[in-house]
Amino acid sequence: MINLNKQEILLFLHKIKEDEKHFNKYLFYKFQYFYGRRSQEIASLRIDDIDFDKKEITFDLSKKKEETKLTLILPDAIVKDIKKQIANKEQDFLFVEDKIKINALKRNMRMYLERNSNKIIDELVNKDITLNTHDFRRLRGQHLYLAGYDLEIIQSLYAHNSLDQTVEYLQIKEIEVNKMLLDDMK
Image (tube, rainbow, N blue to C red):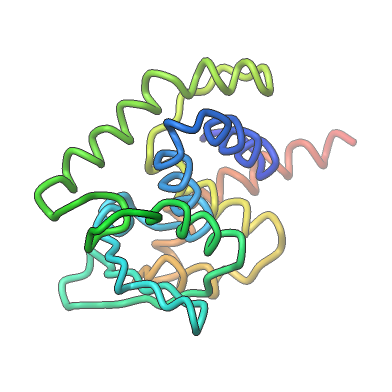
């Protein structure tokens, strides 16, 4: 289990954002964390999936057998970042010029984390942790759970078929066992 809290993830994202040439990585990982989405769902985002007037973003849930869409809120801070990302670009997709480059983008996002996350996290919070792109998704769910949000609502965000799937995916039992052990020693 990855032991990073919400503030540590936000520090990590801010650190990446500091380097202007990595803005697309910052935004990609921010989407993964904020929305709890998979790499494929973010990499394949089209500009048309974003409704700036309604302040909504629609994800195509790639793992579902039937075509499933999930529409979520678009906060002002993310609107600002998206507009920066698409400024002066003529493209259909948010992160790539065309569909052919989606797999290369996902590989690039994964490799950057494999090579750099440990160093950045150690520098920021003195922890020996290496992230992969999917960790943002799992951590978001864990952080929502620990903040007291209902597990059934988290299940709907993740589009899991059952509550048991969400409990297993978010490692809830491990979290609760560790909390119990720490609480019992107080």
